[in-house]
Amino acid sequence: MDFLLQLKKKAQAKHAVIVFPESKDERILKATSEILREKIAEIILLGDPEKINEQAKSLSLDVSQARMIDPRTDENTQKYIEQYCEKRKHKGCTLESAKGLLMTNYIYYGAMLVENGVAEGMVAGATAPTADTFKAGLHCIGLKEKSTQISSYFVMLLPNNQTIGEKGLFLMADCAVIPDPNADQLAEISLETAANFWDLFGIEPRVALLSFSTKGSSKDPSVVKLREALKITKSKKASLLIDGEMQVDTALIPDVAERKDPGGEIGGKANVLIFPNLEAANIAYKLVERTANAEALGPIFTGLKKPINDLSRGSTIEDIIGTVIVTALQS
Ligand SMILES: CC(C)(COP(=O)(O)OP(=O)(O)OC[C@H]1O[C@@H](n2cnc3c(N)ncnc32)[C@H](O)[C@@H]1OP(=O)(O)O)[C@@H](O)C(=O)NCCC(=O)NCCS
Image 1 (cartoon, helix red, strand yellow):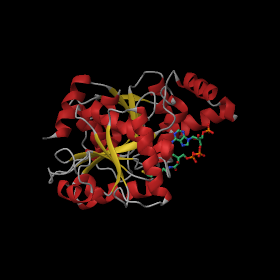
Image 2 (image 1 turned 30 degrees about the vertical axis):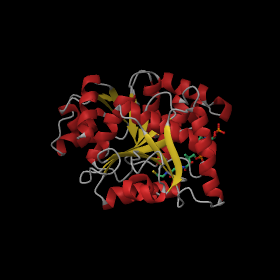
Image 3 (image 1 turned 180 degrees about the horizontal axis):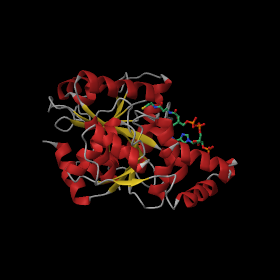
Image 4 (image 1 turned 90 degrees about the vertical axis):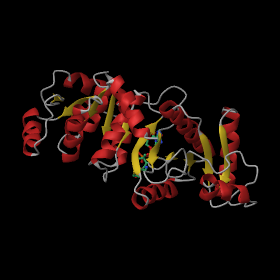
């Protein structure tokens, strides 16, 4: 099944407005041209329209249907600066420092467009580190009710292996934000990622808490943390199909699951993989992406009131378009 095509059709029907703050990046312009051509979303590009058009022309791209907002001349700029300043005044923010930030780092400006409903979502991070997109989201948009954190997941699509996850589709979390989540944070990561899987694909999530151990008797703190996270997650959502701790082969391969975890609830058919920490998760997703030629969309942030998503700086144009599709569907 072509899951990406399915998501694309849903996004086309929704036609959300997505802002790209990094319009100087060639990949962003190429993705914009493709998104507009396929009518996946409406696009706002931040920057000097003359320069954007010039660069697009030199690349033989048509971005004429994109809305272009130049923060230096936009009539709402002062309003956004004042709003940002108000949000961060407890951290000593002044109008001058807010102006300095919004006018030099358009990721913050883009986040203020989302906060004000001018755009319904933002995709950034083609050239900036995750921390920039993360902080713009946290400070300009804030957490949704009942969320205590921003975490993230990747949508992984394996083109040549329909036996893993859900016919080659699975989510991996948290590959980008929380370096060493405790049990409560892992439980929230599990619940949020599972909910996103259901919202995007309408398929029941089967969540595996991954470790080097499969329901062993290890007293290693990392394993104890996972067992605690399992308990907390189940206490918050008893109906969620989640199990662990388990090794990744037990999570993904039914034969191995039968041997290592007979009678286990996941049965080697996990479609949501939760990693014990950022180190393992980030290495794992890149390994799958690069060695199995998987499409990796994200990192998709969870926990924010409105969707702001990040890109890996190594993102391809396809990755950028895919992340816009997911962002549009989160809005
Ligand atoms: C996300 C990250 C940038 C936050 O770092 P930081 O700004 O140094 O975080 P701090 O611990 O100093 O906290 C700063 C503020 O953010 C908040 N915060 C930190 N992590 C948070 C999270 N996951 N969700 C919500 N708030 C968070 C803190 O509570 C604190 O709030 P306060 O200012 O109101 O006190 C950091 O965890 C990080 O670098 N993660 C890895 C990113 C990365 O390199 N990913 C790999 C590339 S894809």
